[in-house]
Image 1: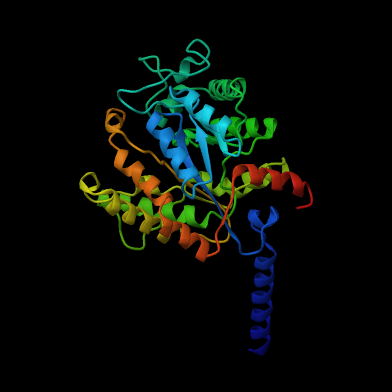
Image 2 (image 1 turned 45 degrees about the vertical axis):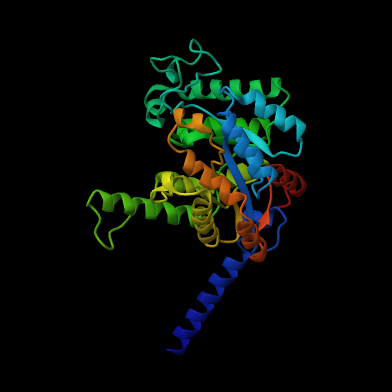
Length: 354
């Protein structure tokens, strides 16, 4: 029994040492062990004037640190002008392969003749990820991504990173490979959670259970299968790191699924409290490492309802990011705020030492 106990202790010690030796990507980038480092990121810049206002306010007056631009959309010149006038703005490309709204739509920058598999009967990008999945080829996806990057560079806008509108580039391995390859080739960081993804996995499981309950199919204790992509996350992360790019430890992409009851009839003050409470609770659950928190800050005018019905939801994100209570929470709990620009600068500095 004594030998068995000693063996158990040695195994436990070895596991503990191994865990201690495993570094997060935040540590590899030079932040202290145990640091919780956040990129507070606003999607959909350039989609509309209201979206641009939300981005500018969330970053200029709030705690948000990053944004990304939808290059095929109509209000891109306005946000690019802002980025040029505020050169410290951390702005990437929100690579856009879908056009999801009913009455406000956009087409591919590469042109229908070049990427016919990305175009629907209206001559616009498909409204759903499924439309892209079943109709587009990986080569067409690659051509459109490069056309969007080319427009940005021609406008004098050098993106700090690449990410994916509606997650379309993660829908199929062949699409994701083109996305990762473009980032490596151009040495532009790509949004990819290649660490332990503890928060993202937890949220994905909770969402799957909620959907099963909604369908009346959930049974207590039943096994919830993870998405196949999560099984490859660490290997892809290691590959990106070896190719000179920074990698996220985790991803917080939950706020778009939050549904405040009767939000359309609530005051801004009530919406702000509800959204700030949710951000404080969820960010508080993040583990050490580099995490990107995705949101959609918008300052919706009366006309925004003609684009979509989610103006109040998007305003909730904006109100939370500009809430002094959230700022105080982040400071009090030692969160470190960063940008994709700083993350890449740190990756270059580290080189191949890690």
